Length: 238
Ligand code: 13P
Image (cartoon, rainbow, N blue to C red; front, side, top):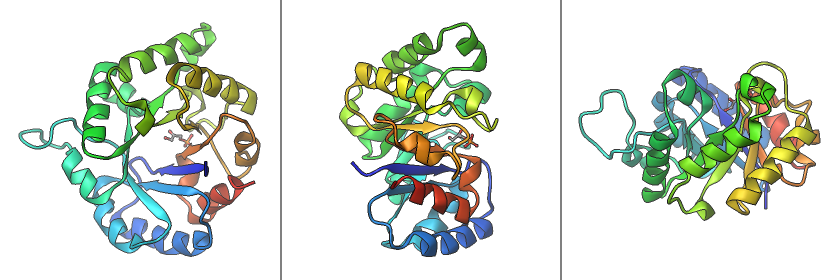
């Protein structure tokens, strides 16, 4: 399977900045056909980026959806709206869980809504520093999987293992730690693609992608710069 390299821009980039990134980035990766490249910008940039991408080798994803299709849900993005423009959607990111109080049961509803609308979810799981230090990493991840994926067809999802202690901290999980968790995840879920996320950079992608069960990366900070993100995409082919 081709590696999957996804950019999670989080709450960054205006439309102007987003379109300018895509113009540069398209050029930098235009010859690459054996990496599944996904960009997940903020909602305001989905349409202009969709138009800018045309039939390029770059896919588009949303960062979140609500589980209802339409109605009185101020501020939310419907799966119907996302699917007009995107193939993918990030669900259950640790920032959604932590800052916006999303629990496994809400995440399960969002995963169901994504699949019902032909969106491929990138389902995020991972433990906090406190849980890691208490030796509970695998228990936490197992619970997130069991509750999050209840009744879900796992053949159609991507999982992203993002240990919270490695997000935006510069502390990448070592390839060994990530590999061990990825293989644990596949023991529970079966053979799904599992991406690693947490301080992925051009300097560490090659070591990470060498691991048997690391199938790609979900990249935050280092995806905001076209050159740096293109180097991660290229590094994933090694
Ligand atoms: P960083 O790459 O900035 O650590 O963020 C990782 C992440 O949260 C991607 O979803």
